[in-house]
Length: 381
Image 1 (cartoon, one colour):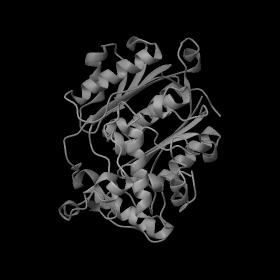
Image 2 (tube, rainbow, N blue to C red):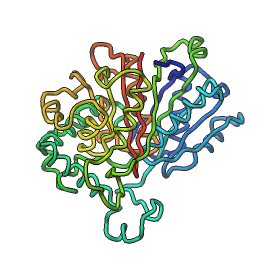
Image 3 (cartoon, rainbow, N blue to C red):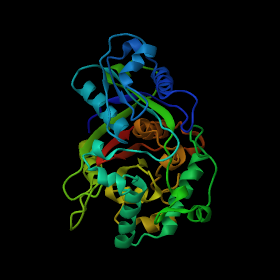
């Protein structure tokens, strides 16, 4: 294992609808993360951040302070926050700086995302035929997975039910009202087999992390969490991803499988050692598939594990203890850093009513973004 990068400060804003701009939410999150770390903005030696639709992260220096800090904009779909974090890790490991900021933020309008085919290397017909509507991709992918591995609609409903239940325990979550599995199944079909309440919603929010070297961490009063690994991968041939115009034959490859395997190898521990984890759950089928793609269980085993409560806060493998994207919504730039924030709070024992019992020592995060980018981390205390 390596422990040459630590997270000494972590913060997030409330997610949902906001009168504030995405940039203001980002500034609020940065100030809170710096306060949590016990360092001033002037001490930050490098910064990385981004959003999908709320502006350029480097312009945050107007409010944070004109210190001349190198500030790099990052944009990588839903993996923007994870990509910013990996950039921050590498800045410390390279000796560029010993205190580094990673920030992600966004503010999306109401309704579904509206990507343009040409931005993704696709022809106009891909959009005119309705395939840019990502709900269709998620529906097709989980339907195939359910057929191949014996997953039932009831399991998809249980995943969403858990998300809303955990969201009730998360003060910054958007959806904080429990919803029963029966209500979820009856909420209206969007893209078979996924119903309305199985999906997350675009929203507004920000999250920020302050990373530091071990030498700096020893001078700070608050508890730091070791970032044992951070890995990012893009898709290989044969994967079925958002905006894939076709599917190759045979066993599909998985960018999430590749990223998680790299993260576990770098950390020197395996999936069986994880006490708490955050998985991308753009919709409930994604959480089911990512459990296996990240090596946390075998394909098809999710049906039994979820029914037995294994992924609940008090279960053997707590997943998305803050309610994930389904309860929090998804401001694209902030999503991956929200995941890391939650695991940091769990490892610090500061998660309040949603605290995993037994003093968890290891955590894992996984974020997935179009058109096939995944970033994963392993953290320990």
